[in-house]
Amino acid sequence: MNDVNKKETKSMEYSDSVTGSPNDFCRADLDRVDYNNESPGLGVNIGNSREFVNSGTCEGLEIKVDGEKNNSSSSTDNQQTKNVAPYNRFLILLKDKTCSDIVFFIAKFIQHYPRLDEGLVDLIYGESRERFYLEGIINGNEDIGTQVLANILHSFVGFCGNLLIETKVFNKVGNEEEEKIFIIEGLEKLVTTKLYNVLFDAVSFENDDADHYLFRKLKVLKTFVKLDHFDISKHYVETLQSDSLWLDICKNELYKLIRVKSPKDKVVLIVNICKILLSYMNNINKMRLETDSNSGEERISSPPAADDLLPLLIFCIIQSNPTKIKAHVEFVSLFRNSILLVSEDLYFFTHFYSAITFLEKLDGRQIQLNIDNVIFEEQFKSSEKKLFGNNLLHLLTPYSESRLSFQEKQNKLQEITNKLSSLKLTFEDYNSSDELKIGEIPQLFQEYKQLLNLFKELKQNSG
Image (cartoon, rainbow, N blue to C red):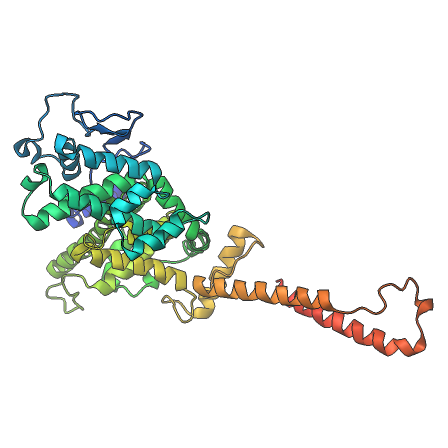
């Protein structure tokens, strides 16, 4: 057997023994997604019908369930839906005649969001103080911020959720708490997926500068950062460096993350990435404990600690460098209902968010890797110049500080411009030095010095 075949065989044996099947540790509640579809995972089509019909079409919202045949006699009986994927089950139940008014509200909300008409605002907010505050924003000409967009969406989901809880068809879901979670999950996915372009465009716009900064920074870091530059046990590093399958699997999940459209599906993929990494480390622990039980070498605690997970997450994000990653985590933070982002989901999402924050703040000095700060800065600047030429940004300045310094620079330039505008130039109308009198030379010199100082300031602040 030649060396290439040996290497391939070793990789296959390692992947079988360390990872097993990815299905062993990935979450199973990610709804089936067609990544080539404009609205992946969504079983609802917007049509043109404006009639209430018994088939489930109300004000242009037609309920269609993935894999369901067009059969007018299909029942929403609980026995027939209990083995269906939760989101599809939600859609089947939503087709019941008792939910037709609620389907109408959902369709109207999707069609008019975020500039809701007075009728919808009245239904959702009643006479609350919040209603009068939001009405001014909704009816105004200014762009609506993401916090307000999230507020409107969550309020509507809560309003419709309360209506669905009162329907007979949703009473069969489970106990009161299970029923509430099931309904909010379904409504959140339905609304956020249909409104994804509106919602994500708004989040992307607010985070565009941060994402541009991060994308360039990660592109530079990818050229020289290695696993042993992180605070990860050397036993993990040695094994993980010998095979890249774990990284390929995580990259695949990250690429899915930027393509799915509901907050829940994004969270599930983040959880999967974390579980993949933990599973690899846990299996490495087992292998080493079996191999080195009598060697006296340092042993790794089992299960792996959170301190090992975060560095691996950071490394995966650097190697993948997914587009608009900051916008995607902010999208989840804004539009995932707080009663759903709990326990395991919250724990792993917090880790992922922390990894993004670390990369934003990484400067090689206060926030650094296991590289000498001088060497880090030299390698970073060298790679940045190779990638981007002289079109350089302040990538080693934490993003929040770089934004501040940029604003300060803009303010300083404006201040210099104002000084230039207000500067009195006594001799600007002179056409020749012959017009200058001997007694005016000191004044001319003083004005020259003022202009020279302003020129120096301008040069310092425009670099």
